[in-house]
Image (cartoon, rainbow, N blue to C red; front, side, top):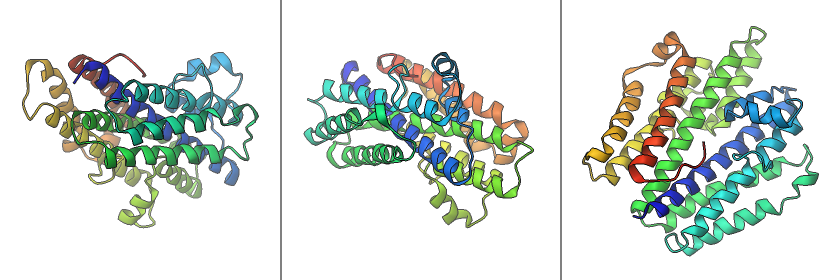
Length: 313
């Protein structure tokens, strides 16, 4: 497959996933701020790793500033608007590769976002926008599964999706775990806190089916790090990335893919040999920061191995 095509497939997928993750994070925080008067909007900027860029443009971390920056700012390359725009541009560049139905869906998605009256948005009504983003991302995933042949194109889309998910889950856990250590937290607020973490990755129902109504920080961490069945746990995502790599390489390791194979193996080993107690004892922040550093290196090695372009974060 041409590197140009692989690059467009990969970044189309990552940007759609990134837009959805951002929309869900903001929606959950918006509901929390209304129902429980919980603000801490700066956490969302920290999760995105864009504090410096944000502070250059806004005076304070209030709801409107954070939502504007993460949703519509043309200066933020990872805003929802920019992510959908970039994904649509990549889709247009490979119209001869993807099914017509998928291109039409992507084009319609872009125009729906583009035509949103974001200059006049209000805190009371904007959640409809975020729910639309989440629905359209789900439609994208469904269209990929229903219309795309399960060949190399499909594999690059799948790899990108699960790398983006794994990294976002680690960032959410890293920031929210720090917040849970606040001595002002009491039992009810801690319950709401961890429930919001689960909602941020659409994991609350899957968690409750496994653990029933007992939501504790340790169990949530274990679920989002190590669960083998939940599609947004880091362990599950890494297994999917490994499986895609194996399929792309037909189960063989060549000289050009050796470094990538080794790194994926090292990342998987952490999640096969460590327990949640090990992670917390070691220092969960250090563990997650190491994982995020490995994710960055993983992205660089994928670019190098398959000659993709350096796009995104």
